[in-house]
Image (cartoon, rainbow, N blue to C red; front, side, top):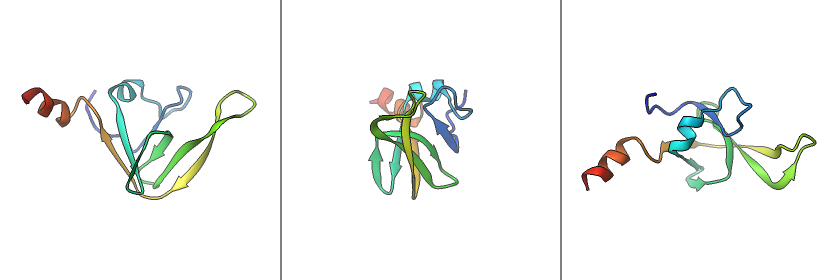
Length: 89
C-alpha cells in the first residue's frame, strides 16, 4: 500500500472508509490548528471531523459522535518521510 493520505478515514471497522493498515501506522489530525486525539472520522475535502461525546453510547453500543466543521490537516505519523529521517539520524 502506498503512503497516501485518504480524503476520508474512519476508525469504525464497519465503515466503508476504514483502513486498518493505515490506522496502525498512525495518523495525526490537526483541526483548526490544534492536534486532536479523539477523532473518530474525518473528511479533508468536506472540512469536518467527528469526535466522540465522552462515554455516551447509542442503543447498539457504538459511541455517540458530533460533527465539527473547520479546516482539517492530516499527516502520517510513521512509515513515511518521518520514518526515513529517523532512520538516518
